[in-house]
Image (cartoon, rainbow, N blue to C red; front, side, top):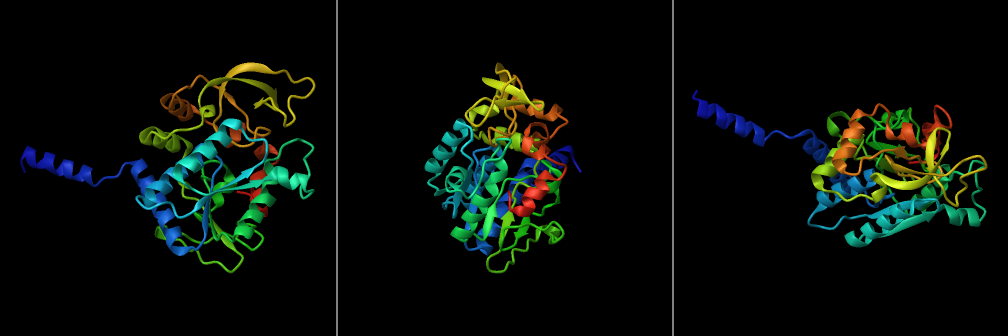
Length: 312
């Protein structure tokens, strides 16, 4: 075999070898198409955070040039970051997608929910979410959860069955060998689907860089008025902070994950570009939820307890 022959063989191999991002993308696209062919009414949970943005980007790819065959659903706590809400509305309009909004504030006003003593509304999202799913008869709900985020999410399958009360039983997990997904469900039940299950935070950012995906500005370093509580830098605002003895400071920060202002902490950072964020994430030894989400620190099983009740 000549050197030219070897070069030709190597080039041919490269043509049929997927990069790790190509493989993840192909898996997620397959999941979207599988759900579209198997379920009747789907919706994509969209918070305006990086994971739901990447998920929507993958859905657009999965069905192009046809339109995405489902809308978006956001549970608005009333304490969300204004930048994220603006991005949510803009992307829904740009993509021509129906946006369903379930409002925690409306439930509080109607007396269906009560404010928590700690001021956080993130755990209050469960009832508006489950009501929205039931009222719209959604049988498949896409979520942006990843297994590397938190141990309860690591337990979940790509297709995660929820009963008629939207509750999850971690003991009743279906096998998913060879990427074969079982979407069978009884009337009133639905399936939560996680196309990003096998992605890591670093891979999400690498994909954002490769695809040139636009994100809300709060994911990058910027100056913000924050105060420290329980080891986290929280944004000052009408939601209930700061309290007496908590000093507001102006610091250079960014957000690794985006949730409710009352429970999502910023990290001190000068990473103002996607490349700088990738370098920062690669060096981190804490997941984004472990480092910056107060709602996951309520107990060792905080996330699993919420998921059992119907949370994301």
